[in-house]
Amino acid sequence: MTSQSQAPAQPSPYTMGYSEEFLGLLERRNAETVASHLLPHLRPGMKVLDCGCGPGTISVGLAKAVAPGELQGVDIEASQIAMAQSAARAGGHDNAQFQVGDATNLPFADSTFDVVHCHAVLMHVPKLAQALAEVKRVLKPGGILSARESVIEAYIFEPDPQGHLKQATDTFAQLLTANGGHPHLGKALKTILLEAGFRDVRATASFEPFSEEEDRIFLQGFIRNWFFSPKMKAPAIKHGLATENDFAAWGEALDAWRAHKGGFGAFSWGEAIAHRA
Image (cartoon, rainbow, N blue to C red; front, side, top):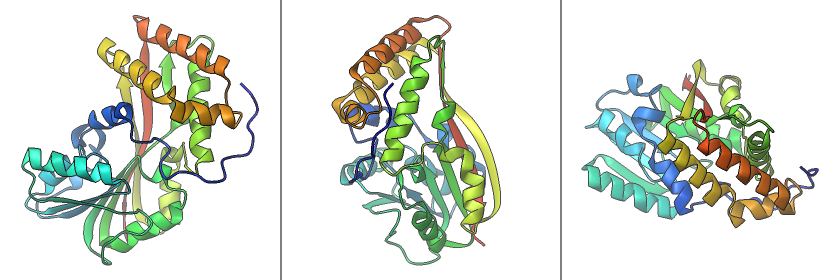
C-alpha cells in the first residue's frame, strides 16, 4: 500500500456509481431484509418518505406496509427514479410515487411525513448536518427517522490470511472519505442523531452475510466487476491509495476466498430508529 495524497478537489455526487454490477447488489435488497428494524413501526395509512430510494426494491415493501397510506421516494439520479417507478408499477403499488430530489433540499413542505427512511444514504452525503435538518423539517412532530448505514471497518472476509481483503475494504473506505462520505457512519448513528436534535434514539446493528456458495460467487463477481472497474480503480491509484500490484493481490485473495469451502463474508451495518421532538 502507498501513502495517501491529497483528496480529489471536486467530489462526485455518489461514490458507488450506477453500474449494472452495483445495481445488481441494490436489487437483492428489500424491506424485509434491510428494514426489519423499521417494519414493526409502520401502520396502514402512514405517509412515508424513502430518501435515496435507488431502484425502489425497498420502497415497494414500505409502500405495501403502509397501504392505503402514501410512499414518496426521492433519489438524486433520474435513472433510479425510472427504475423505482417500474418496480412500483410491476408490483401494483399505486400508493408509491417517485421524483428526483436532493437529501439536502427535499421538495416537500414542513411536517409532511410520519416516517423518513434512509438506507445507505447518509453515509454518502457530504453535508450530513444539512440532510438531517431537512429530514427533521419534513417529519411531523413525533415522526420517525429510520437510518441504516455501513460500518466498513467491520466488514468480514474469512479466510483472509495475508489481510489483502482487509486492505481492499480499507481502500474503499478511503475513497468514500475522499469523496466527502462517511464510511463508518453506522456505528455513530446514535450520537449523530442525538446531536441533531432527535430523541428516543434506539440503535442496533446487523450483518448482511455472504456464506452460501452462490452468495460468495455473487460477491466475488460484484467486487471484480465494480470495485476493480476503472471508475473505482483509477481514482485509488491516482490518489495514492493503492497500486496495480495491490489490486492484483486483492484479486487473488478474493478468488481464494470465494473458492474456500469455509469462506464467509459479511457487510456490517448500524441502524437507528429516532423521533422528531
